[in-house]
Image (cartoon, rainbow, N blue to C red; front, top):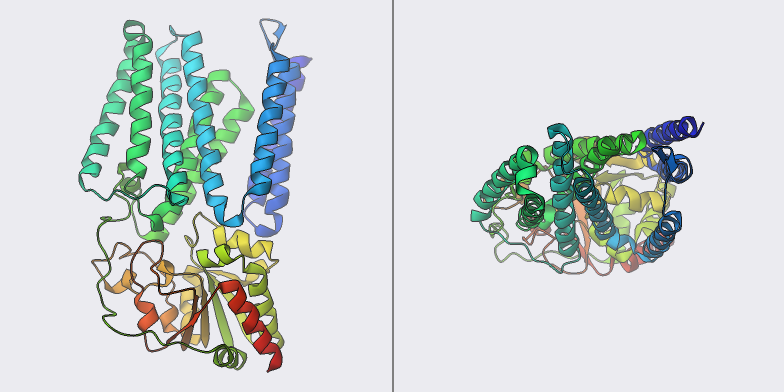
Length: 463
């Protein structure tokens, strides 16, 4: 009976993971999808504690297990409630790293318990160890870079070093699988050290503009490592969850690589982001950006037929998503058609802008992806860029020396006019000058995004 209930609970948990993942495809149902998947995980955990048996004996150390769950729940809840939306990418990276660490620890524990396992069993153990370790150390470096505590290292030799290190990991993995009895635990620690080092080195040279893709890739690593744990324990729900996370992360990584015009191989070997030391040409020269007053900006928008809003990380920093929605509604009251042009890697993680705008109750149909937004630019009267920088930089198309050259961007310069809301002329996350600011059709509206948008809404009310 216990086995039947356990398998039934795992089946229910697996179904909720699939349903929850499907619901995450839309901001309207994403919150409910998270809760559905979390409920399935809770069912699986409770069923494991009470129904799992080995050699006819129930699981032991239940007080310790419950205590660990309680401590983890309190810490996770506290961190989630305290984190700011601007720091959400760091939290995602941190939690992802913890998942990788857990997978690596599981592999170490299993090797200690069964060092004489078959080649297939040991392959699963060591793959989980290597991939989980890479995910952990890589995610910690990504966390530090997103939090601006760790700087990029742009050195071409790192590409070759990473390739050599990756080859060495595969060699050690092969030795570990077929000669574990000879080398014992030493091969485990060597594989662990090499994997941790590779995780650090392959993330270090990656530029800030490419970080969303790295987060997605590391997430897929953690999913794969968890799936190997499911194989080890013959645990269907763990296997299903790991496969879903791994496959979804991989698909998202490939889609984002396509959006960034990069190759997945470049991500893996650590040369992603193109050169690190390159910078945009001084195409702007000594040109001076032209400013626009609040009143003129309000008039320009109020008498436009079609307005596009391009959100960026500055929108998140200023927590201006709600007032941005107010601006949208105020313009629509005046008969203006408004849509949001969303770049796939705007912000610091995949879907960052979608989450921000969904939080402000912006209708999902108004969020237009880049490939659909660009053709509309020529018929758009005004583009309002709120805190975005690199994703609207013309250097991506016309400057081969730029580190973002070749990256698809929102072609806001095709619109009749562009208003850029920024605190200053400071470079974006990629650290390069934006030629857009100096184009004839571009006007700068300086100030805090939230404060500026509030004043802009006030001006619109008076028109």
